[in-house]
Image (cartoon, rainbow, N blue to C red; front, side, top):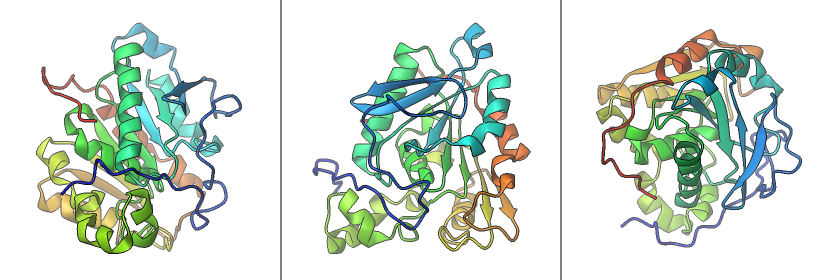
Length: 280
């Protein structure tokens, strides 16, 4: 049984990933500071942003990177180096604040609304590259697994891939509208690490950079397990291991040329097959 009809409660701030990422879900774009010049706007009452590339304006549809999580303090200045390289290559950056959704159906529905706004209203590519930093990995992977033909590729910076690992089932159960006992019975229906077949079957490539001493989002239970399972499914994934690094702001995570190269390669792929339908 899929629990898509349940009323889903979006959780708010949690302390374990760091104060710079904790927040109250933002529903007003008035004061968000972006790391590069861009536009704040609303999608279904939720704050969204777009940092446009002037170069992409000459091509149609315009390529873009979809960044998550879009919290009041994210994206931040740390992303500036790679954002500059995306913009110089004609690739814009966008995102939407879905609160502490952990990839739940309500958050995915808001992702779909941003996708529709970007592709149907603003003229952007129907196959963006999704880039998840930390728990943004849960968001981008969950949406991509629902819509694999609408994705150019999936990338991550120490991405959370596994609800069992972070934030844990007790916390994430509430976001999915279930008690802990019920969620334990059904978590495999929602956990990104257990839903990879659609991405592999559609030939979607994945990239991640992850520290090998990360105690908040452990490599072995997240990007490492993701690569292991994706290879079993004959999927393509590149994993860069940052030796001696944890869940931190080391500049190597944000100035990773391999990540930039992955985005440049996969951001301008062809449109999905005609007649392919978006699921809510």
